[in-house]
Image 1 (cartoon, one colour):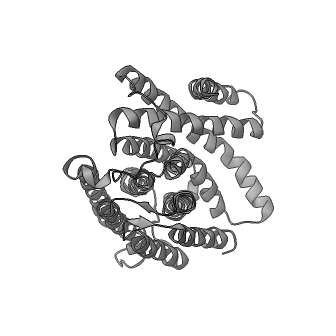
Image 2 (tube, one colour):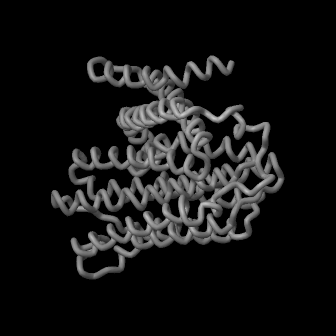
Image 3 (cartoon, helix red, strand yellow):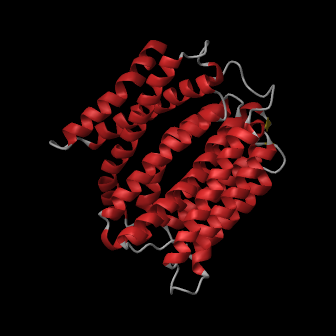
Length: 360
């Protein structure tokens, strides 16, 4: 079985890109797209684990988070270029969907299944608290404050304000990455004794060679690119399905964001099952921070350069759910220990977000 899985992780990115090339000439069944997408997710998680095992934490989780975010930003920008009037809210809807999926969906599942299997899990509170403080600042400045500025009417920033927030977002994210990887790396390492030696943490008996890590890095990028492009191909069928069900168009953004975040979701869940909730939280918080800290400056630059309107301010409902999520995350992750209760609370909030998206 391991040999079959290894072969799958090598072949699925190549198969995905071959199918994408053929899809430009011939229609590809949706079922086949979903199957290849799933195989690409498995491949991405495997190669991310190889890299993480080679370079150690928290660099491994940071690698996966940055790779997914860079490709996600490229997808958002490409969609904005051809979205017409809908481009103004596309970045906002995609970013808030990703943040809610990560902060409540991924974190909730990891804490729940980790608590069910290991009763209680521990992590470095200092690192998670730093991430939450940065995330709270980024989300409020980017998605809430535009509703209360008066230079421009509506939930939008003026050109000067948009440029200032973009620079601030990059500054905050850059400082966080420096703290995570250089000055206070120990804050983001798994506490000693909390790892499960029989779980996914020990998939690799020996440290991968530099050559293996480089090959995995290339295959990771190929897998993530395939995941995003396949998710884009699924956007039209998903849109048709959502329309046939009579659900709001915002539901499409949630589905696409969930597909793009699949590799990180699977990696985070595997880490939680192995009693490495620190790795799960590093992945989740790192992804949320990268989504805000890199996406907002990119779309802001695009808006300023090509004079593309961009609306960042959330609705009242969105503001309430975002602030509730940040408040609960600060409290549930404020002790350095988690149980099934924290996981269930996050999942309930995520369920409310999904329900009110479909039934506003």
